Each structure stands twice: as structure tokens, then as C-alpha cells.
Length: 277
Image (cartoon, rainbow, N blue to C red; front, top):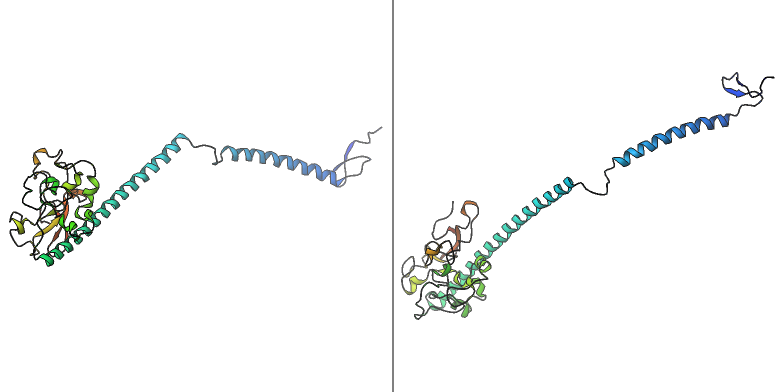
């Protein structure tokens, strides 16, 4: 007897079972299931590839960390340099402002007394313009080598803040240490240099009486360089270890600000009346 479940091909071209009517839904299910299984297999392999090569990993490699550290170091170095330049320019601007205040104070004193005040001769927070101050080597300016802006300008209130009588950079640099005599903070050897001996003893550059002519300097940051002062034999060691305050590049630490009788503040080569190129 022929098996009723023998497979035969129908007129529609589909295979079916004898005695069993065709079931389109079941046939569709088999085909669709095969597609899902095949597609699912592809998706699993694809997902494995994505996970394996995903950029969102839990840690950096050593090389990547080193690159990040190097970039941060470069940025930090640039930031430090920019900060130092900004700080230097701020001090220089404050220096010029101080000199303008000093010029006004001297002009006011001149109006009141018809002469300029005498220079101080000894470093320290006091007036030292009287004849009993005769010792040398501890002057209030140029690291101990020159006459200083008169402290009486502060005592007589022509200047309201004593710090105005110092180059801000020297105030910052020489908070520590001591004066060559007296035990005061070392910045007291770096008061503004004052060209006033011409009016009191005739001993300063420019000669007697012409300091107000406009062509002779009145006040400046330093005037006497470390290799030309009282302590030049010690250069470049203490106490001749200081430098001119300003300048960049080839002129670094070779320039200073100077104020003339006309009231203008000018940048000059240290110890001269020459302008930098």
C-alpha cells in the first residue's frame, strides 16, 4: 500500500503530503524562521565586531597617557611664560606711575621752598640728608652706591605711600636680606636714584643748579650698575649681584626708567641717557 504520507509535488509546484491539505501559514513560518535565524547569526557576529573595536574603552594606553601629559606640560609652560610677562609689564607700568608721582612731589616742593630737597645719603626708612651722614658704601640707591630720593618727601607728605619711592621690581626682589649697614630690609639700598647733589653740593651729574633744565635726569631706577659701584670688586656676587630692572631679549636687565625735569618718563640704557634701539 502506498504510504499516505509520501511526498508529492502538487500542481502549484509546492511539495505537500498526500492526504494532508497544504498549509500556507506553516510554510511561511518555516521560511521566515530560517531568515530570522540567519539574520540573528549575522547580527551577533556584527555586534561582536562592534564591541571588540569600540572606542569607548575603560582605560587609556601608556602612550596615550604620555601624550596627554606632554600636552598638559606644554600648555602649562606657555601659561607660566605669559603670566611672567604680564607680571613684568604690570611692575613696569607701576614703576612709570611711581616716577610721575615723584616728579609731581618734587615740583610741589620746589614751589613751596624755591629749591629741590637734598638727597639722602644713608639707606633706611629715615631722612639722612644732613652733614652728619658722611659714611659711604651704604647709600639708599644703586645697591648702596648712590644718593637716594629724599625720605623727607614722605615725612612731609608730598608722597603719601613710602613704597612709591622704590622701583616696584626691587621691592619685590629684595624683601629678604639686609642693608649693608643698619639691618633694614635690603630694598632700602634700592630707593630711586636721585640727581640732586647738584643743588646741594655740586657733586652730581649735570652740575650745580641745572637739574630743572629738562635735559638732565632727576630720578631713575638705578643709575649705577653693579660693576661700577662701591662694591664693583664683588661683581657678580653679593653685594654687587643686582641688575637693571627692565628689558627683553638682547636688552634683558639692561634698561631702566628715567624721569627728566620736563616730567616725561623714558626708557633708557642703564646708567646712560641713551635710548635703546
